[in-house]
Image (tube, rainbow, N blue to C red):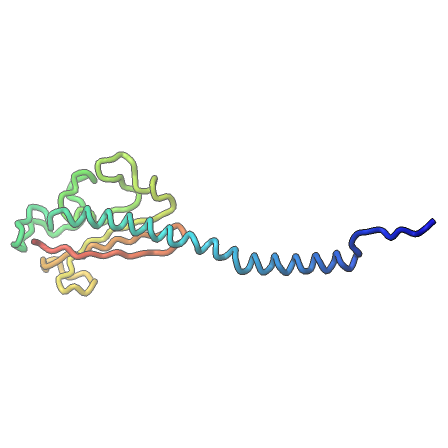
Length: 168
């Protein structure tokens, strides 16, 4: 009977194949997979920008301060934040937005920002900044208010958006 050689792989060929496959997987996991995590960053940044822009546009459309007369830098109140008992739909001047967070509701809505922006964080600060240096000024300076909106994305990146509002 003639001897028929069996076809297949030898043990050495299998070990070399496994080593090559392991090296390829190590390269793939160390080079390509971290890129997938970073690819979501621009989406988070875009959503944060949309949220901040919509809030800043809304805030810019409000009066400079309670009972203010345009072009006259005279305001009735030095208090920042919502007036007594004032709810989100009744915000009527810029400083009412001081302290706004992601848990508060949209304008003319019963749903909160938190429902649409899962795992995002939001804070709004409004303060007097007459010399336009980004630092709070004494309350008796009525030249300008700085609106600072900070949105933190789900991956922990804090994005600051700022705008000035003066009494005009």
